[in-house]
Length: 191
Image 1 (cartoon, rainbow, N blue to C red):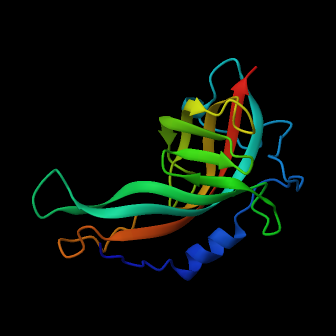
Image 2 (image 1 turned 90 degrees about the vertical axis):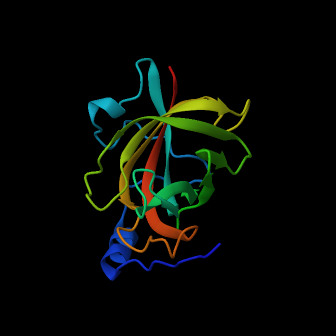
């Protein structure tokens, strides 16, 4: 499979390095905010009976593959495959690593617990150059550990991560591109 490296612009790199959320305590555990810091659209609100348990910051890439578009011959597009990110207490560079986020979508904590979820709602990011904000519902989770009681997840405060607008053609079928992104994830549990 061909691999194409799509370099981000200097502006995108500057935005990614400057991205931050509200200050949080730096611990080796997930950060439990007193209240949700970011206001979300109504369709992304956690279901009634769920409360915010903790938050994590993600820094990584969104992976896309170049494929033929099903709408017609000679049309090609970048198709989302999976995220690949490290999870931290905050976007502060000195923040401790808490886990990882990958295909599924799956969030896995340093304690080995994990949660797999599915998208139930999305809304455009306030940053038009960023991937959408999401509400996800947990499909399965570990019996014990950090992610054991997670019922819903919000992806908010996204920066970057969108598929390139160009570079996918019949000559690049099967090629991969990795677009840098950052996001904040809010994890909810039953009250």
